[in-house]
Image 1 (cartoon, rainbow, N blue to C red):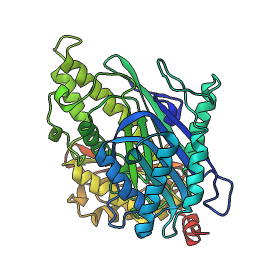
Image 2: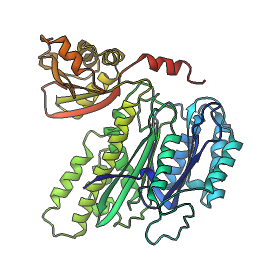
Image 3: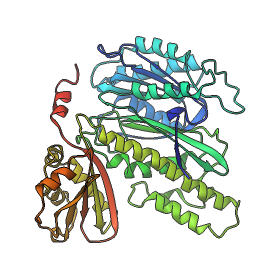
Image 4: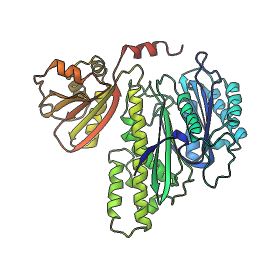
Length: 467
C-alpha cells in the first residue's frame, strides 16, 4: 500500500539538502541556489525536453544519466543557461567541479540544472562560492547504521523537513506554490520511500518530462528497468499536462535510487520479463502490466522470488505514479496566471491514443481555456477542439458533460446542444477545479489531461518576464 508521508525530498534515506540566495535575480529575497547530496552514488535515470534548442544543463545531464550514477544535484533559478553556447557548457563543468571538490564526489556524477531567462550567462563565480557555502550546511535525517555525520540535525525531523520545503521554494520561478510530495511503501519486506519536488508554471507543454523535477528514492533497482518505468509513467502524467503550449528548452526530470532501503534488487530478470514488455509510449498502461504480473504469480507460494518481485514492481509503479500524477496536476493548477485547474477526461474511445489526442487538444485550446476563465458554458469550443485534433470519432455520438464540486451539467448530447440552465452552468463552472467529461461511445479506453484557464494575468507575467 502506498501512503503519503511528510519529508519531501528528505523522506528517503541518504539525501541531504541546503539552499540559499546568492543574488542571481537582481530583485526579491527568494533563495536561488540549491544543492542536494546523496550519501552513496545513486542509480539515476531521466527524461529530457524534445525541444531542438536544448539548454546547456540538459546536454550535461543527459551525459550524467547515460553514465548511470549521480551523487549530487545543483539547481539555480533566475537564468536558464540556454542559448549560451560553449560558455554555457563550460559553466556546467565548473558547477560540477565545484560540487565535486566541495562534497568529495565524482564530477561526472553531478547533475546541473537551471531555470529562468534564456540567453544570459550564469554568474559562475557567485555560483561556485554558493556551492561551497551550501556544502557546509547540508541538512538531512539520520537513519539506522549510517556512518554519515549530521552536525546540523538536532533531533527534530520537522527542522530537516522544513529545509526540504525551502528547497522546493528555492527552485520556483513564476510558480506561486512549492510542489513537493513524499510516499512510503514496501518492497520485499523493506520500507521504501520516494520524495519528490518540481517546478513549473509557464512554458509548459512537456514532450518528455516536467520542467525541472526530482524524485529521490532509497529503492534498489536495475537502471535499465528504472528508465523504462520512468518513461512509461511520464507519458501518462507529465506529458498529459499543458499550460501554454510551449515546450521548454530546459525540461528535465530525474529519478535517483540509492538502494539504501536494502530491498532485493528489482530487475527485468527477477520479474521474468523483457524490458520491451514495458511500453515506453504509454499506450499500454504500465499499471496494467503490474496487475498482470501479480495475477500471474498469485498462485505461487509466499516468499518465492518471482512473486515477491511482481509485488515489488506493482508497489513501486503505484508509488511513482502517485508522485508524478500529483506533481503534474499541481503544475497544471499553478499555471502562470491561472485561477482554476481544467481537466479533460475522454472516455468511450476505441484506443488510448485516440483518447489522448482528444484530451490534449481540449486543454490546449486557447478559446476553451478563455471560456473556462470566464465561466462561460460555451461547450462548442471543446467540441471544436476535439474536431480539429486529428483523432477519428463520430460527433453525432458524442456527449460532453461539465463537472465540478457543484455538480454536473450536460452541454453536448449526441452531438447537439441540449436545453440547459445558464445559472446552473455558471454555478458548476465557478469552483477552482473544472472537468470536461467527453464520451465518444466507441470503446472502453480513456485518457485524462490536465491544464488551466487562460487569464489576463498570464499576458501580464509574460509581457515583462525578464524584469
